[in-house]
Every structure is written in structure tokens, then in C-alpha cells.
Image (cartoon, rainbow, N blue to C red; front, side):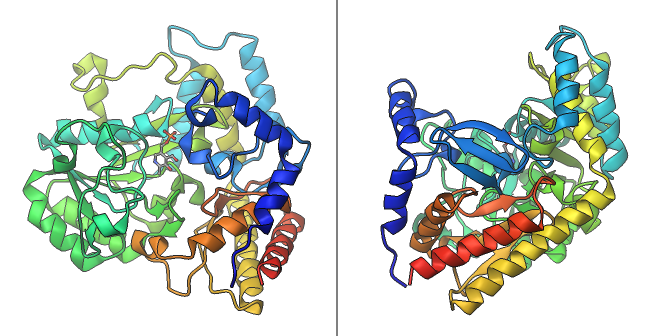
Length: 442
Ligand SMILES: Cc1ncc(COP(=O)(O)O)c(C=O)c1O
């Protein structure tokens, strides 16, 4: 299949105002933005408004949103009950130098839903949440190293900026991945603190953990590897991690910043596996900046100011009432029926993508769980990061721009997360658009 520049030419034609705005932005912001994960070649669109499942750019192009701000907006854009609650709160002030009761409301919702949550604390991002889970694990165990999965993304703090989207040529054998810095500028010694394990490879991951067990404070894992490709962990792999950490006094951390949207109690409820600590973000803030971490009472108590605290934790905007009320209203809306409907709709989409690709003889793997999905152009099953690194990146780039041209927004690596604002009609539009794009590639 020949990759052409046809999609690029059409994209340039459709987005002149976005291009001008981006060029102006580059005069003040390196790369024109503050979030590298939403940059794509040749430049991103500038969004002027969004409502429900629709997102409109500076050129007036309307697109269906299948990424929902990297899976955050599970109820879609500008959801009315969420916006009304936020507006009501804004009239009472945006942030106080004292606790507010919306925080307790959201904390209760989370503790009631998540099997592993005795106690929870809020932050402003998933990054701060994973930072705190690892810090708490170190404080609790008195050990320093932690293990993470190759390809696993846990935010932008130094400790986890290791072996994310690695160049596999520099990352050693798949069975024994090397820790590789994912950015310049990390503090000295960071790589020595991180033990990297292959995802869904029970024997090799267990062997590596065994070799390091006496130094490990924690194992952190996304039960569904999210931003890198929406790859579900196997129940056997996650169970091995639970058993191994339990046997060896190591804290098991589930990073559910993305995978929490799989079930009312997160993917830990779906898999029936209870971690010691969990990090959250995205959907629990209803579209506002958020993170949270929670879990076992004896670990979370390290944060209790009436008992020390042993672990320091502050943040001017932590648990601000605007985020807390938006999150609470969002979770209250998310009944088991809503999860079921979203999962069914997403399965319809996965089947449609597979059908179109099969008809056109394009090798594809469609991954995901619940309302999460990822499209991978390869004939090989997608089990871990190395499989993603081997897929057809040129076709992926063409399909991403093609979807933009056909009125569909996804992440540029073709992962997505549905919202309740989408329905069968929009799913059919997506599948039809994909068919048109793949036919143009022939
Ligand atoms: C699994 C996971 N952990 C942590 C983070 C970091 O969250 P934030 O971007 O809110 O800092 C992300 C962000 O995409 C994520 O997907």
C-alpha cells in the first residue's frame, strides 16, 4: 500500500487559520503549545468551541471527538449538569484557603466505588498522583527502587520519565529491557532507581522482579496500557504482579489515570485484583485539572497531619471546589448502565474498524477495553510496547490526517476513548470515514 501526501495537502487546505494561529503561537511558546502530547505534524488545529461530541476549529471545521481530551471527557464537552454545578460554584468563589465539602463528596464516591480505597487524597494532575504513590511506597517500605513496565506512561516527573516510547534499538532485549531516559535533563541516578519489566510477559517480568525484589519499594503498572496504545493487561500478568508484590513486601500501584473509565470501580474492579495504591486523574475531575491517589489505610495515613505527617503533601489548587464538584457530578452520572452502554458502543466501533480493514485487506489490530480503543496497523497481535513499535507508522500518520480531513478527531497515535455524547450514528460515520481514507490509499 502506497502512502501518499494526499491527506496532508487536504489538511493544509482545510486549516489555514489554525496554521496562522499556530505560527503566531510559536513566537511565544516553544512549538506553539504547552503540551507536547497534542502536537502533530505539520501543526495541530486550534479549537474555538466544543459541545457534546462536536469540536470546532478556527477554520469552522466541525469534527466528532473520539479522543475526548485524552479520554477525560467521558460525558462529552460542556455537559449541562456539570457546567451548571460549576457555574453555581463559581458564584461562590473558585478556590479557598480551607477545605470544602465537595471534596468530601467526591472522596466518598471514590472510596465507595473503588475496592482498594480506604482513603484518598487529591492533586491537580495524574503526574502528581503517580509521584505521590511512589513516594508513599518508598516511605512505607524504606526501599528506594521501583519497577515499571516498558512503554508505561505515568506522567512527567523524573522517576517515571524512563522507558516510555523508547527507540527499541537502544532498549536491549525484549525479555530484559534496559532503563532508557525518555527525556534529557533527568537528575543523575534516576535510571538506577528504575527496574523495567516487559508487559504481559509473566516469566520474564517475574524473573526480573525476583532479581531485584529486596530493593523494590513498588511496582507501578497501568492495568490497561493507555496513551501508548490501549493494550489491556492479561488477568494472569496482573495477578502475578499482585501475588509477587504481596509475597515480597512490595507496594503494588495501579495507575488508573486512564483505565479508571473501564468500570465504576476502575479496571481493578473489572479484573478483580486489589492493588495497595492507585493513581487517578482525567474523568474524576469532570474536565477540570485533577489527580488523586488512594488505597490502604496504613499507607495513606503517612499523609495525615495529625499523625506527623510522615510524607509531605501540599498544592494551592488541590481539591479546589470547582474541580471537586465537576468530578462529583460526573461520577454520579456514571451508573453501571452507562458503563455498559459505552462499552457496547465501543465494541461496535472496534468491529466496524476490523470489518473495513478486513474488506480492504489492511492488516489491523484493534485493542482496548470498555470505552477505550486503539487502532494498530499490523498483522501481529499487540501484547506489549515492542509490538506497537513494530507497526506501520507511515499508514498510521496518513490515517490520522485522513480522519482529521473526514471530520474525526483522535490522538495522533490512533488511540481513543468514547463519551456518552456519541452514539451509533457517529460510530457509523467513523467507520465510513476510515473506509474512505483506506480506499484513497490504494
Ligand atoms: C496512565 C497515566 N498516568 C499518568 C498520567 C499523567 O496525568 P496528567 O497528564 O494529568 O499529569 C497520564 C496522562 O495521560 C496517564 O495516561
